[in-house]
Structures are given as structure tokens and as C-alpha cells.
Length: 157
Image (cartoon, rainbow, N blue to C red; front, side, top):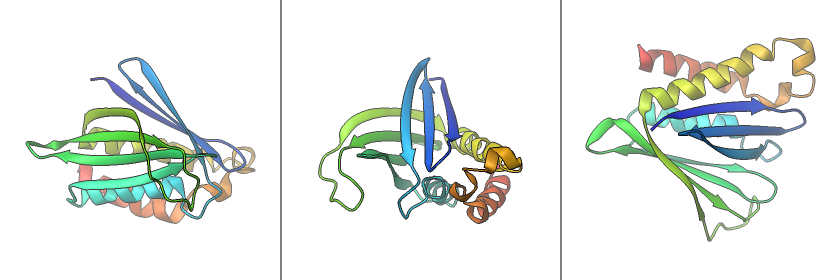
């Protein structure tokens, strides 16, 4: 299975994550206006996996609804994870009762971690440009990224 992940930090509190699986695109629109930072939530879940937890889960909210992302280690292939992305229609603060099947795929742990790391690294570098960061700077968790970067570099080496 051929997988590629691209993350774009748009202006004014929005992001888009594209997941391409075997030349089919899956697009997730993500809002940053709620209390949980979506980039930070992703990084925290990936750090749990790097530290040996078997599963991790986070939610990316849109307006309305969103996606639940689950990462599960494959017990018979500990270097692999299954990523399951399900959609929901509940707004933030509402109880999420139903999920609709989105996508799922298998990927090596280190590839998933590497893809997200370089997408977030790219954003951190782009935010050094004054014009680029003008309407985005507050939507990137710089302190959390430093810890994430340290954890990733130790994990991959």
C-alpha cells in the first residue's frame, strides 16, 4: 500500500490534511479554534506510539463534525500500525455517538512518524517568514513541536 501524508496550515485558524492511498486522496478540513490544538493532539498521539503504547487516538474537528484518528500497533508485526479514520457529525462539546467509516490503512510506524514530523517541521520553518506567519503564527504549537522533534529524532536513530 502506497501512502503519503501532506499537512497544510492555512490562514485564520484552519488546516487541511491530505492522505493519499494508492493514488486516491482523502481530505480532512481541520479547525484550530477549539481548545485542543489539532497539531499538538496528533504529535501527542504519535509520541505515545513511539514510547511503546499499543494504541493512540485523537480527534480533528471541522465545522461541523470531524474525524477520529486511531493508531493501533499490529500485534504480529510490531513495526506496523493500522490507522483508522472515522467521521462523525457531532460538534465539539457534544457527545459523539455515531461514526461513519472513513479510511484505514497499514503503514510502518517509522514511516507514519517521519511523514508527520517533516510536515510539521516544514510548517515550523515556513513560519520563520514574516509574510507567511502573519495569519498563522498562533496556530502552531512551537513548544510542543520542540518536544515532538526531540522524541522523533531519538526514536528514529
